[in-house]
Amino acid sequence: MSEQKLFTKDFTLVLIGQIISLFGNAILRFALPLYLLRQTGSSTLYGIVTACSFLPMILLSLAGGVIADRANKRNIMVALDFTTAGIILAYYLLYGLLPLVPLLIVVLMLLYGIAGAYQPAVQASIPVLLSRDNILKGNSAINAVNTLANLIGPILGGVLFGLWGLAPVLILSIVCFTASAIMEIFIHIPFIRPDRKTKFWPVLKNDLKDSVFYLRKEKPVFIRVVILLALFNLVLSSVMVVGIPVMVVNILQMNDLFLGIAQASLGLGGILGGVLGGILSDKLKLRSTYLYLLLCAAAAAIMGLALFPFMLPLVGYIIICAMSIVAMAAATLFTVQLCAAIQRQTPQVLIGKIMAFVMTVSNCASPLGQALYGVLFDVSASMPYLILFGAGVLAFMISLLSKKTFANLEAQENTVQQEQTEEL
Image 1 (cartoon, helix red, strand yellow):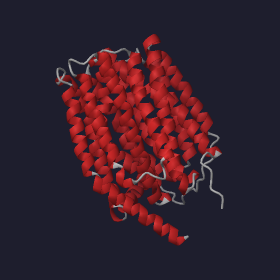
Image 2: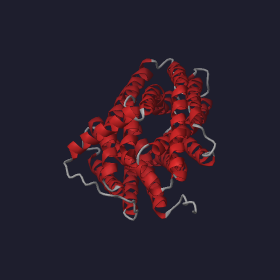
Image 3: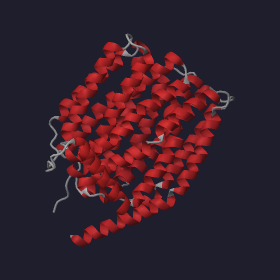
Image 4: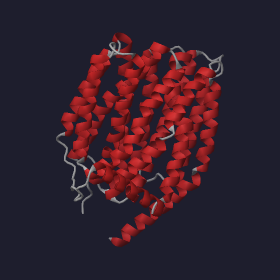
């Protein structure tokens, strides 16, 4: 039997739709928080607004997982992209007429909430569109195009925002989301409509109950992985989300283009990690994934060097960009392996809900971390490097604690693969 190719028509359209949609998302997520930071100069307010905008994404990820398993995944993507374009258009018409902070919080909460409901549909479509042997490569490709958008988006956003302000960024984002939605109409994702004819909330409750039962009885190792990820996001991911803009804009006093390049460094690291994940897919071992978390922790600690008083701003900026590439490459390698392992070990009818559970619970601590780091950067304005050093040390300890858990996850992966081989 011939091996199924990776870039089928439908999977390729999903990839292209992701590029366009996430390109618009990237420039928007760059420009809106930057606009707030430039207008207020407050790290605390920046952290709080970022934390508030993250909450709907966490809450709607679980609902998105249930919907992804019970609705046509293509239709979910199309509807949410059109909705996003409409929200940005509404903000374009209202900004300048209403108070900045409340309007920005509402818009960011809506946009992040949609993103939380959107990603489970994309993740759940990968095992449906691709053969088992191509799942890891498919995840690598999705991560690579996502980070390609995150590479180009902030740079263009920095140029547009620096030269002409917020309006061109909003217009370009509207065009991107509309184009993505139109393209996704032509995707065919196999879908069997469930027989259950009940209202949404009972379905949501029952499906989440099934997912929790499956995790507790069949995959408790998934729960341990998620708890470790939540701790890691609280300590490290949050300091990167809040810290990079604050370090570049408030501490190093760089302009918008420099911030765009710094944010793009994360995208470049993601592309590097995605490419490596595809090339090395047959050689990567789950038991070694904790090493990627250790590398992220070390990169954050090294970033602290950029903030020493004797460090030249340009040298410090280069350190931040270089460590952003390293951290994001390691994080992407980690994400690609973990997503593929969960998808391979989970029954197809539960994939959307389980992926949503993993994303939701692992991110649940992020808003708290973002709000906390916003305050810390204001309180420790004279010694900001201590924040990065502390985050790096704590993340390093969490990474070491995760070693045994990922070894257990690999053992279960091998057991599942052996059982499937015997069935064939």
